[in-house]
Amino acid sequence: MSQRGLEALLRPKSIAVIGASMKPNRAGYLMMRNLLAGGFNGPVLPVTPAWKAVLGVLAWPDIASLPFTPDLAVLCTNASRNLALLEELGEKGCKTCIILSAPASQHEDLRACALRHNMRLLGPNSLGLLAPWQGLNASFSPVPIKRGKLAFISQSAAVSNTILDWAQQREMGFSYFIALGDSLDIDVDELLDYLARDSKTSAILLYLEQLSDARRFVSAARSASRNKPILVIKSGRSPAAQRLLNTTAGMDPAWDAAIQRAGLLRVQDTHELFSAVETLSHMRPL
Image 1 (cartoon, rainbow, N blue to C red):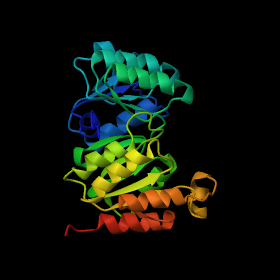
Image 2 (image 1 turned 60 degrees about the horizontal axis):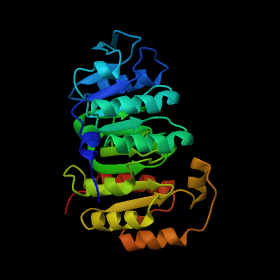
Image 3 (image 1 turned 120 degrees about the vertical axis):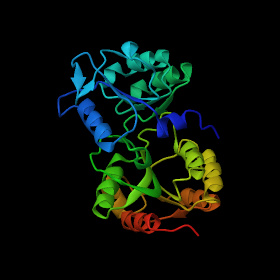
Image 4 (image 1 turned 120 degrees about the horizontal axis):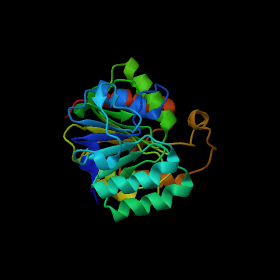
């Protein structure tokens, strides 16, 4: 399966924060703060016409004025500007972009724009991405997480925040912590392919709400599970998961069949999810 652009997302050499701000309640401030606090070892480029510098870093007034093309951009502006800014990033040659917020009415236009420019998108409506081995915290979460061997992929911002807080209290580490959001472009199957080959990842945990392509997911999961243990929890099975995400219960035997075919282990509720994180984070290679 295609892994086009994933290296620029998961191991970027430079990052632009579009809509960076010095106002503490703005997304552009939170993103800059977390990137700098995480210790990212590469240029962080704040883009804003409102400030000469953001948190001590020289700012650029617009995307066209950037001195070089960033590997990764994060859109922190009002969602109404998403499409125009994504077009500018594409013209600049940016490879990947995290879209923090976008209404469903924009999805098709955003996807078409990304395809025209050969860009990859994470999100929209994503908490963001953390990659502790790269010192990368391109997320809304201020929680510092340790380096570890467990990768976590989630389609739920609520669950992502809960796991981050819980893991910090227990000093657990991750190789990657990826919040997919609406999965407009990059989806779980591509990430499974990448993480199956990643030397920093020894186990993978998934929190899923839906699948855009079940067959593609099963194929990727089956291949990845030959090398690394993969646990999955799907929202809606248990009262605990339903309360956490305000979802509706439903019978899902097709999910169980697909997971069994792929060689994965399904955990039943959030209590088992926490236990799985603790077990996998302390697991040693055979």
